[in-house]
Image (tube, rainbow, N blue to C red; front, side, top):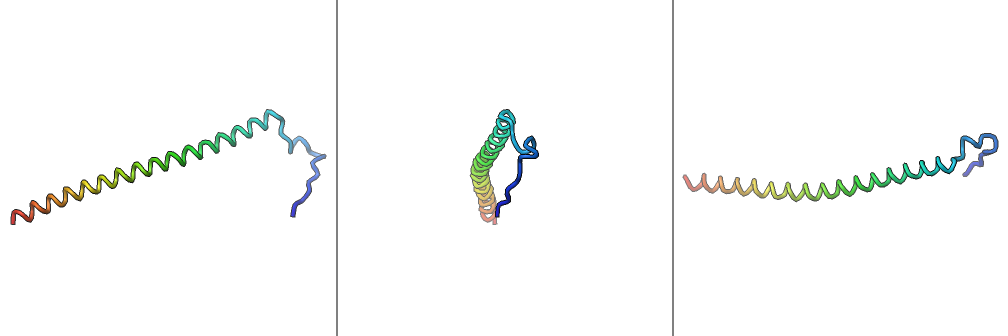
Length: 75
């Protein structure tokens, strides 16, 4: 249900001047752009970080396996 407001008594509090409208829309556009850039950056950072951690785990497992093979060979 929509309520009709009478804006005739206080028009200064409800209407933007053209300059205020430009500032308001530019702030909204800038904030939306920052959100998009942040989401893209976090996605790329997550993909790169995941691949680096996968490689690090493989290298650590390889070192562990080599050490285990060397220990088994000595006995």
